Amino acid sequence: MKRAVVLMNLGSPDSTEVKDVKRYLDEFLMDERVIDKPWLLRALLVKGIIIPSRAPKSAEAYKSIWTDKGSPLIVISKDLRNALAKEIEEPVVIAMRYGNPSPKAAFDELLVKNPDLEEVILVPLYPHYAMSSYETAVEYAKEQYKKGGYKFRLTTIKPYYDHPDYINALCESIRPYLDQPFDQILFSYHGVPERHIYKGDITGKHCLKVENCCDTPSPAHEYCYRHQCWQTTKIVTERLQIPKEKWGFSFQSRLGRDPWLQPYTAARLEALPKEGVKRVLVVCPAFVSDCLETLEEIAEEGKETFLHAGGESFEMIPCLNVHPLWVSALAKWIKEYAQGNKEMVLK
Ligand SMILES: C=CC1=C(C)c2cc3[nH]c(cc4nc(cc5[nH]c(cc1n2)c(C)c5CCC(=O)O)C(CCC(=O)O)=C4C)c(C)c3C=C
Ligand SMILES: [Fe+2]
Ligand SMILES: [Fe+2]
Image (tube, rainbow, N blue to C red; front, side, top):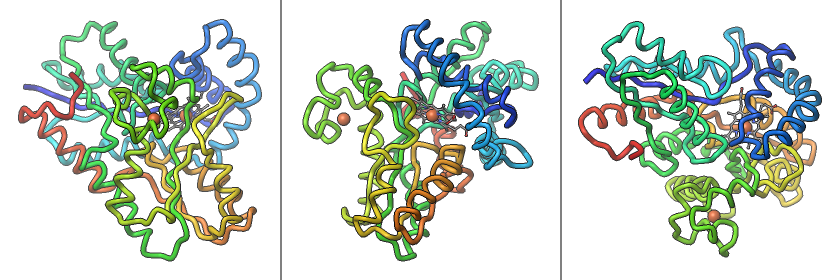
């Protein structure tokens, strides 16, 4: 069977110019799975309030991390494509949920060289399920697939937040940093509004309603971002034998005034030195590629917050990026699927 792989990430603006950042933020924040308000209210909020005030600040933030080759998230996604292409027989391309290249552009690029393509395996570069990340990426790819009337089959890799191969890569990417003296390793995940968690609860009565909801078995967990982040943290800390008092769990990147998942990373980085944590390591497992939210929000702003509050040393552990174990995990999933193992794909 003639197959190909699409690695799908979030996307970045085309440049750091305010007009490009505005266009990107407009596409991003007008997504009803990101800002889940009725269209008119969302448009008023996004176009009238958020974009005019945020775009110039975001453009400055992007400038501080931009590389000669472009946005780190795009550059790393391309590097990952190249590394994976060396490990598997199938052609590999990238696609982005917002900005370029779109899934349609990725499908068309594949068809130019592979007109007899029979199946595309979509790999969302998000380990955890969230309406505003994994779900919107997959639904958008499916929408473009249907609109395009493509003849090949589209198959999607499941969230892999607890998959042994992903966990192994994540653990080995963290392990070398644990050799140095540290007081705490903070697992900081991109936040989401609490409302998104309630919405995604298929039981309607579990998430954020039952005490210790994320440790209490429930069918809701298949779609619960908080549970999945918690599981990644628990499995990794157990495997790396990090004692309970030496790790923390928090959520970053809050936007707006609604309550988001807590504790907030910025608040923790501010409080930690007063709690005696002077040397901190931060790891951001919700992202597999370094991006604005890791390189600017954590490594620049977060570091400043922590040191200003009395912290002495701050180190951010890079995302998996093109870690050889991450590349080999992806390659293994594709090879196993081609051999008939359907475990890694959505039904
Ligand atoms: C309501 C707002 C947002 C939700 C919900 C949200 C969820 C979410 N986002 C990611 C991953 C990334 N987000 C990134 C940037 C970013 N995120 C938001 C808003 C929400 N995200 C904004 C407005 C931005 C743009 C930059 C800014 O102005 O702050 C990025 C980085 C992109 C880059 O180019 O580097 C990533 C990656 C996840 C995984 C997630 C839900 C779990
Ligand atoms: Fe985001
Ligand atoms: Fe939960």
